[in-house]
Figure 1 (tube, rainbow, N blue to C red):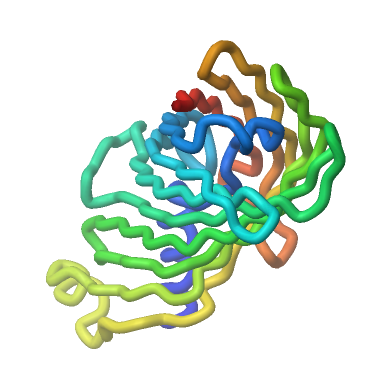
Figure 2 (cartoon, rainbow, N blue to C red):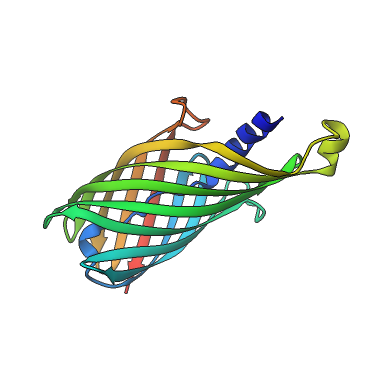
Length: 220
């Protein structure tokens, strides 16, 4: 039953996964505040909104982000994801840049079987060619479910498994991703597309083995 619980947790929480921030790395010295909205397919159909603040740290500009995500194919406020992220430039020249991202996240989902709350972390890299008006970059990352708390429903105990135990399950698994980002800027707005493929940490494809999202942000 523990193994089954871990597999179910990974499958149901995947639509609320974290990912690397979509941002033009050449604009980090400009407006320090940003808001963004994102929609598309990433393990499921999702919509998210967030706020970013760019802060100086040593000789770099660090992007700190908070974001909330909901699945919109079947909107349910009991299914949600929230995350924080730090995006840090690693190396770069005037146009070629590489950055790393670290994103702790909390995700939750509820159905007739159970209520699950997950603590996870996403680690990613993004790098490519950046100009003031457009960019194109490669991205990669791993999204790990570190621990999931499962609370079984009364109906599940009554009809399926009376002895089901609530509690935390560790090391539930994760997913690897690799893809492309491309964006254009106009005035104080950016429009960014992402697309790529997904595999679980064992090398197999999830139910939807690709992702594609559209983000628009405003800077001030």
